[in-house]
Length: 388
Image (tube, rainbow, N blue to C red):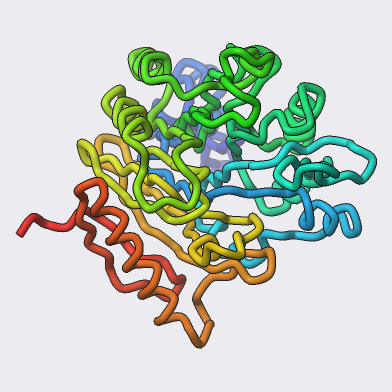
């Protein structure tokens, strides 16, 4: 309470009533109260108005992240290990940070890979802590490795992500949970993530028990769920993580193109493509980008496929009432970790190789790209080229 003196002493020592200035109602002063108590006024400070919702949010999205096998062993030996330290600076430029989590995270007594199949693997629970240290906001868990160590490991992965506060989309205790979009609220700007897989390692997903826990890429149900969310007003932007296509190929499958284009037509603002482990092209549909293959972010390179050693982080600027803006921030895999080109003596060579590949692979979806010069952070603006 603020006390304001309103009287003035006369020359004879009497207190006389001074002429009162007009009362400013915005200060919360009651005029009647002022008249009744001429020597003090109670002033209530105005409440600060709530800030308006954000009109712009930056999402930094990455490709396939595997915290199993050799990386899992490193995490078991040193739980404080941060395998994403090399790209931390670019990740920090996002209000929201997303990756595709390509491995389960469960307690298996130190085992990080099947003894009979090196393509069946699992990460330790501390992998979730590594994601949290990297300030990853949300992950997709919908992919062909979601069931590698079974149902228990799938559910334990969810529990470990919940434990560290990393949101997840694409798997769940029920199919409804798996198919539901996860919403990330950034000061009133709500970004929704759907995650689906078109690949499953154990035969047709619809005939496997995993069908009750894993969101499938379906050309009918996915667009319907996107459209329902849009109609409800539950999100200001919608992103779709799609896991599918053929590994190590330059061009997306016709089925892939059909599914992701239907997602855009239903109201998605961008599609983030995974599983190919190499960079595939970028297409714009109704002004919205489809990233068919973002490459590996943290995954073992294929010794016979050099292209698996390159990937990019996508930086998406999402604004109300405007088409998304896209930047790509390329890197190469050194050992097991991603290393940006910035500061590398071979930077110009690596950038030329990556951008040539993006232009070439984008031609498979009839898209020409305009790619700017990279900035100090190693990121380049990418947009559709003006038709000649």
